Amino acid sequence: MNATLTARERARRELTAEILSAARRQLAESGAAALSVRAVARELGMASSAVYRYVATRDELLTALIIEAYDSCADAVESACAPAPGRTPRDRFASGCRAVRGWALAHPHEYALVHGSPVPGYRGDERTTAAGSRAPLALLAVLADAAAGRASGAEAPGATSSHDGAGALRVRPVTPLLEEHAGRVVAAGGERLRGLAPEVVVAGARAWTALLGLVSSELFGQLANTFDPADAFSEAVVEAIADDLGL
Image (cartoon, rainbow, N blue to C red; front, side):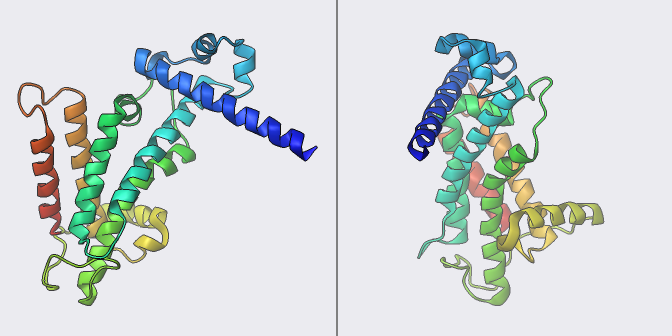
């Protein structure tokens, strides 16, 4: 019985992977708004009713694609931000920013799905919110390491500081409303963000939105005929973001 169940589970995983693969192709060819379970079923040569046993609605299919995209990007960012001997917070933060751009260039349709125009009629849920928070929280955790290291006069865990220990992250005062919003971010970040000042959270959010603006401008053609190819410009912007944070 257990062997039979295991075989069924394996078959289900394999077919689910095929469905998602077909959905990604549909996404690339027709865009998220045109995605449908029926179109995926046609590509796979299956009856729609059979596919509906695995993904009941278009929104469920979109949710699976969105979570997959967010997690794929976050895996790259978390790896790039990982502490290691000799890596400064600036090194880690800049590497994480480059990882976002690198992932987006390698997965333009998935990037457009999660950071482009909203899909008409679709609303995400706590699962997409959690997945979408992973990459920015990874970058914010680097700022938390930097802030903690400088506040104590010690080095950030697993890294050395490029400053002399007297420096500090460059932050601005925040309003009570922004402080409240920052508290939600700290709660979402768990132990790694515990005690992080709201000013640092807001500074990190500014950096994240600036990074997305940079990547979106490149992917959606806003830098064509100016800073194109955008490698040098992107590197300059990432360095400027790190400078602005005081890393």
